[in-house]
Length: 116
Length: 114
Image 1 (tube, chains in turn blue, yellow):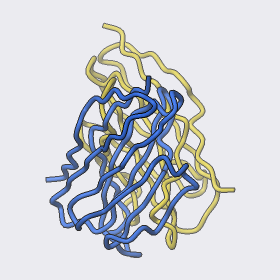
Image 2 (spheres, rainbow over the protein chains, first blue to last red):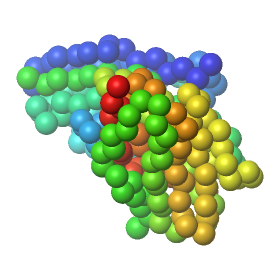
Image 3 (cartoon, rainbow over the protein chains, first blue to last red):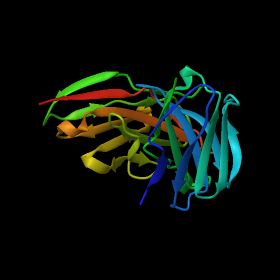
């Protein structure tokens, strides 16, 4: 079972709101990712957690705040977003390792975010 | 910089016709190669991957891809396209020692005529 579950599927928020996106996987993966995707574009990496520690931050603005409470959960806290932050936010996970098994990244269905 | 090129932005085929989507990556040792598909309004689904071994790999939904190191290519094929294959297809590559980061092509949008 290669399933990454994201909630909510759709979110509309004002520029002064605080909201969170949630992601869950039960595949035993210890690397988890947040990506942002605009229409008709490839996804852009935002953050990577390995063993619940932030290992990659692709210079993402501080209005996006990731959190990894445990090995199965990943959150993305949103505050004071701009309309240009409207996009599909994808969570993903993979095994951790430098060998072949650590290389396959599995994606969730995404959360559609609209900032008004 | 390492890169992935998908030369075809948009392809239209008739249902039942064969399909080949092209993907080229910039030279690098030990590439790990992937094809993902994204149906409208959906997330990314892994179609197939190549790490090593047999250069012809089989994936889900009847897709296959062939790795050609001499051409730095990893083209995706399907012998008979179904209307439900209409989607965006992304080729991606990662490398040993930096396998957390996928390098993506810009995608190929596939339309299927009835």
